[in-house]
Length: 113
Image 1 (tube, rainbow, N blue to C red):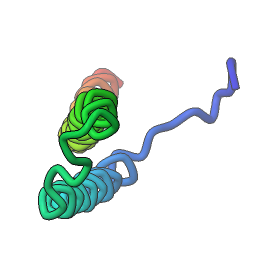
Image 2 (tube, helix red, strand yellow):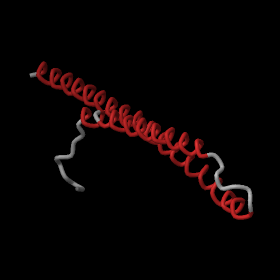
Image 3 (cartoon, rainbow, N blue to C red):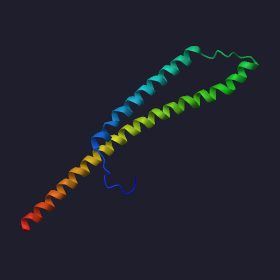
Image 4 (cartoon, helix red, strand yellow):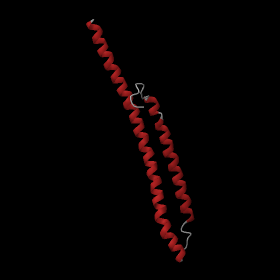
């Protein structure tokens, strides 16, 4: 909500999402390998007659496109895993730097009193 003064980010919770994204990438990649293997085991079962050739014309390009899109999703989850982990670490570092700066300023203010 805009203007909510209770906004905060928990770096540990952010970083905790990275392994989940990695697991999604691994599971999807395994599924893709199984799918490719299964499809390859069938071969070109549609034949070479007119109907088979028509089917192949419509199927092979779309099948290849689908496999490429699934691989793209795997890559996306891998990218997100790294990004989320980096984001969590960045927020952790920012928190530490801000805390250190506040401690230094507080110390200087107290020394002047």
